[in-house]
Length: 165
Image (cartoon, rainbow, N blue to C red; front, side, top):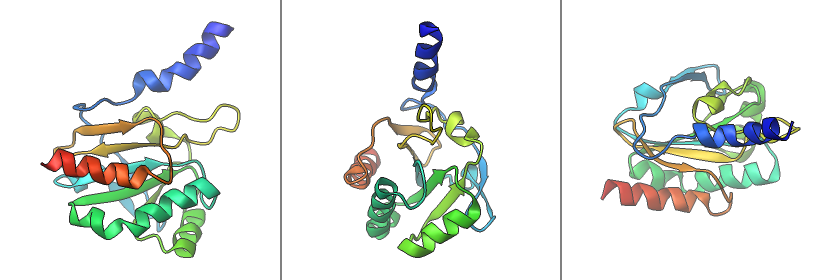
């Protein structure tokens, strides 16, 4: 039993993407039901940040930080996509309440998170707060395994600047 529990905890780490890996392509619905396809964003940096739940303290702090730095991120040729398990209606309300200018994708069954090696929180099943930065060539620049919502946006911006130099 202990080995099985350990494997369940380690599996996302073993599946997590590494710098230089080709990012999996995906299609997912945004808050408005529109399909967003990663391959359509080729030529841009893409920040995919996974978060546990709409309108909770840490998730709101992270989303608002990306919102506040959104113009700077756009100026760096980057796109931001937030992803959690909530439905379109929840994402619409969260986006409107906090004036979030980027898409929030629905990952109801967690399959999108799983394709990137993003784990889930034991017992409660929410997606972990982890992110991936993908380069314009479709390859992973960085997998952020541990994210501090108050500092993450600035870390991503620094990494985009470094990668584009």
